[in-house]
Length: 207
Length: 207
Image (cartoon, rainbow over all chains, first blue to last red):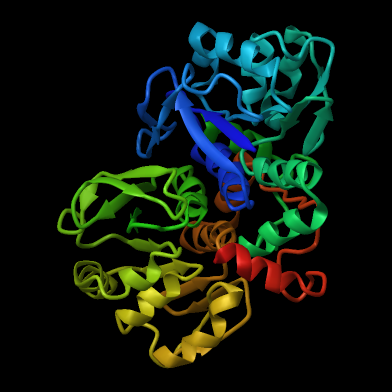
């Protein structure tokens, strides 16, 4: 299985690296970071630079596509090189997926029309503008389109896809390799469980 | 607060990028990837290249150090540039920390002598060779030394440190920003909960 993760300026690093780490540990799976041209792409903090090793043209038919989110998403939504590649690659992919605001890139490519989809909790309400039905779930599967909630949700999505593509034992083995036995010190990762007033503080951090 | 994350060849990407994403979202925190010399450093899959933007000399006194793990750890344990920097930086840091096998780099620098510490579950038994007392916990704090379990445990560690350095509300806000409300599809992320025989399969994947 060949996985392509497109990088665009001001993506959020964990959106990309969470699913990458899960899928790259799977036996027989290859993950490639792609961009319009190979080269460095800098994240939302302006701090971390990941290197795309292939262009979109180099990888027209990946089995799985994972579009990360981040503040750069809204520029990426008008990046015709990215959108054109996505549309064509999606015709052949087994799964075209997104993490966080990456779902808006899928939407901009016309891939979410009429589908249930998720995104970062702060952006869910905007999905109907693009013809999608917002769903507050961690991972939403609609045939070949899979969307995940904010940032860290890509890890859960990748394990879910891996189990479907291979078997539960393989996905569980990778989960054990990355010791993904999460114990967050607080139960504040969702607006449903966060203390009152926390969404306002989180929105300020997002900026 | 200034956080330094040293990169060495064949580190595991999520070990570094998990804590990075948490701490870089904290207001007023800066995270810098460092190496002997600034430049690209390639991960354990040979696939993902992160860029160190500063040398060890450039950043002699970070407030927090996070040493990632990975198959390259065992070479890093004899990297005198890294070990020398760690020893000196630790004299001034608030926390010197590790994720996964990164605890063995702390051990090689002589920083775990007589301390309780953790690491990836597959390596815990080796900690006594370096004078540390192995503890099967997600995050182990011993004053200024904090060690985390395998790969994904760095996210939990970073939230724990952030709460201590600032306050719970700030850490919870970051947790909500990254929507860290984990729902792994399986309960297989720890040898304590994984199905029988899974540790053997996971060890094969680690290789």
